[in-house]
Each structure stands twice: as C-alpha cells, then as structure tokens.
Image 1 (cartoon, rainbow, N blue to C red):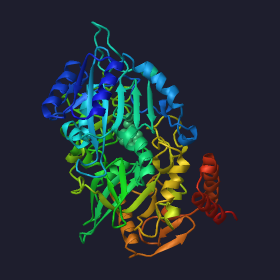
Image 2: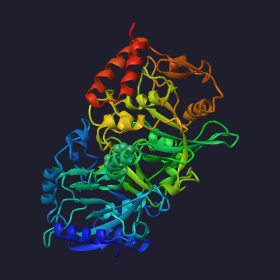
Image 3: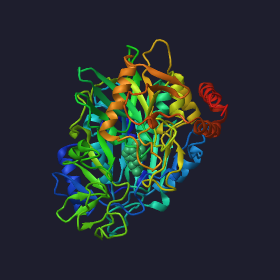
Image 4: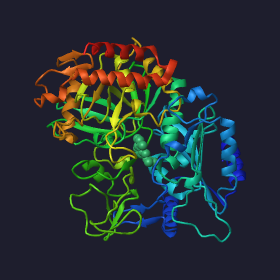
Length: 580
Ligand code: O2Y
Ligand code: MN
C-alpha cells in the first residue's frame, strides 16, 4: 500500500480494535461473492429467488437511524447549533476510544476505501470506512464506488476517516448472532474539524453505512460551507419536454413525502419524460458558466420498501429485480420478498421481518415500516444518461416541499433567491404513521436537513443566502404540496405521475412563457392553468397569519445566528397577513 496516512491509520485502528484479521477491500466480484457466501453461512443473508438478491433481518432493536444518539462534536458547541446533539470532542473521543478498545475481537476488520461521486469527477471525495460488518461492506459496494478504484484515485492524499463497529466482540469459541449489534451503547459521532465519523453499536442503514448521511451530508455540509459549495438532502431529476428540451431539478422533502417516487416519476403527460440522477443526496458546485451543477455522490438507492409498488413506483420495482439486498422485508413461501403496499392483497402466508409466520390476520406488520432495498442506481430504467457526468448536471430549478393537508398551495414560485431560501428554511411537514410519535403533527424540517446539517442551522441559512450573486444564473426556487385534503379528508391532487404537470409549469416559469399571479407567498399559477379544483391554490389569510406566527417562534430558536435575509422575509410575510 502506497498511502502512508492509510497505512498508519490501519495500524492505529488495528491496535485499538484488536480484530482477528484485517482485510483491505478491493471491490472485486470475487471478493463480493466470498462475502455473500460468508453472510449466507452466518445466516445473516437468505438467498432469494430474484437473481443475486438477498434478505437480511436485523435485530429488532436496530431498525433505523438513531437521532438521539447522533452527535456533532465540533470544537465549539455554538457551531453545532440548537438542532444537533453536541459533546466536547475530547470528552467524546475518550468515551469512543473506550468503546472501540477490543471491539472487533474475533471479527475481521474490513478496510473499505470509497469514492463519493463519479470516479472521474473533480467534485468527488475519497474516504475510507473501517468496519467489522461484512453486511456493511456488501451494501457499500452498491451505494458507493469502493475498493481499488477509490484507492487509486486517493493516491498519496489524506482522506475522510470513518470508523464503524457493531460493538459486539466475540470471545474465543463464542458463536456469532445473525445481526450483531449493541443497541444500548449505540453512538454515531461526527468530528467535523477532524473530518472523522466514529459509529458504534448499530449495523443498520445510516448508522453504519457511514458514506451516506454521516459523510455525504453531515461532514460534507461543513466542507461545502468552507469550500463554497452545497451538500444537500436532495433528489436530482432531468425533465425533457416534447420538443426535446431538458431541464434539471433538485428537490428536497422531509420523509414520507414521496421523494423516491418523484426521483423516478413516470410521466402522465404525453411527450414529457423524467429521468433520475439521484434519489437522496446532491452535491452542487458553481460552474465556470455561472450555472449551478449537481452530482449524485451515491451509486445506489437505499430506498424504503413499504409503499413501493408497480402503481406508486414502477421504475423502483424494475430496479430491484436483481442484484439487490433487502433488509427487514417479509419473505414469501417461494423465496421472494413482500411488504405492505406492494400488492393490493397480501399473500396468504409469509415469514415476517421478525422471522416468524405471518398471515393476513396477524396483528403485526409483515415488513418493518423502515425496511429497505439496496440497489444500484445503474439498474434504474429511468436512469439519466448524465448520471456519471463528471461536472454534474446544470440545475434550473430547486424544489422544496412538505406534506400539508391545508394552507400550502399545490405549487408556488419564490419571488427572489432570498425568498426561496426563506421557503427552504420554513419547510414543515405533517408526521405520518411511518415515523415515531403522533400522526398529523407539524414538524419543522428546514431544507429537510434537520438531522443532517453538520453545523449551526442559522449559519447554514446564511451559506445559502450567500450564494446569490449577480454574476450567476440562479436556479428558480419552488415550493410544492402534493397532499392538500378537502373537507372530507380526501386528497385533492392525484399526485404520482400527475406531478409532472406541476414540473411542466415550473419549466414554463423558468422560460417565462406563462404568466403567474404575484402574492405574498410567492407566484401562483393563474386560474385555469391546472383546470383543477381552485382549492389547490386558495390562500387562507387566517391560516397564513397562524403560519407566520408559528414560523417566527421556530426561527427564534436560531437566536442571533438567524440571518437578516430570513428575518426580512419573515417580517414581510407577517405584515402581509397582519390585518386579519
Ligand atoms: O433508517 C435509516 O438508516 C435509513 S434513513 C434514509 C435512507 C435513505 C434515504 N434517506 C434516508 C433518510 O432518513 O432521509
Ligand atoms: Mn434521505
């Protein structure tokens, strides 16, 4: 190995974690096959009837990201801000060192070099994850560009360090469990100044695949701020009109707003086509031409299975036909997968995600609500041809949104860049049964970055505001709400493939080919544009007065770090509805 930093780090971590073996991952097919055989032998993987597909069932206490165990350990507490858990880095490092000491005994320590972004992109970044979980390695092989290709790109440079252990060392002669983890001692810890992540105790998703939320969002958002770019929790799509003119959009939504469905939308408008560049994360840089360009730093989808069906997302269903890892879904009697919402009628018999018999009369769900598929983006039938374009795709529009049964119109266009940033900062969504806690409760989730911003959210707003310069072609900003309900609780807007009609309006607004009505909440489509229920665009002044009040209380939590531009927009909104 040529990289001295890596050599030193491996030696240091080997001494700390005391694994039985160390394996430098090359990313080859042969290596992957060996790891899959190992996972089958350990009963972690069940081979499915879909080609090269496997099912894993996690420990019932290790099923999702753990936000209350996630820490941003910046040198100063003020830099983490009120939306993050903070601990002093030295104190936290000491605690983590204790946990990691001997944590890999009896296990193999895998060293996984990986590249986030297309391998030949100047915007890609190289990191290394050390993990004692072969499940993590095979998932990362789908989610990122791993092994020799990343090591080659790294050369002799320094890299981002990600250390992960399931936190369950094996004593001599002790047999392993199918899903080793340590839920009582789980910590997901970020050291932004050192560009390190230390994750202990969980083998699941965002807690363990440290390339995703930990690096590509939390650490990368800090890097983006320092280096003048944006690391965002956004999908990336290309939209082509019947004349063949293409525009790219990014979009950010809180969870349970159909983000993956929009990323792979099947257009219901003849001649209009949507293609997918990414479903979750966008890294955006300004090009020499003054346009904003986005790359998808990931190579795979880690999508929520429940609700995914041929009706809601046919492209996702096609993507996961082969080479896919399923986690915590149900197993059918003929060796296939099933989850709630996949078909109208459930099968007569299943083995649930907990590994027990399940029938339609069972009280529990067959698949865990946060069950997942890990599948290569390259298998998506709606893959954009510029998915691996080194400089990314030029962004014409940025879409924010949330799930709201009233108040927020179907779509509006920001009045300016500053107003658009305010719209991102004011994102709210009603909670659904998919999340823990009360259903229908309003949750603020600025830019859908609440759990993913690695620094003070007030500084994050300022970073967005600072992008606005006269020398650039700023993308237009939009805010959508697919989830308006009528007085009987029925959705007013059909959603799914019909959302392309809203995207079409955005294209026309970007090109200035359709008029719009200027209102206090943004530009709205002129009556008749959607020939739908006028309730889609009603602005209820009393509801907006309440909205502004609630927003003022929320934004006050950022104290004197709330940028002037956001405060200005809030005051304008308040004033517009003050006389009600
Ligand atoms: O629970 C997890 O570990 C997965 S969370 C996740 C996975 C893929 C895309 N987005 C998310 C998210 O929480 O935003
Ligand atoms: Mn996400």
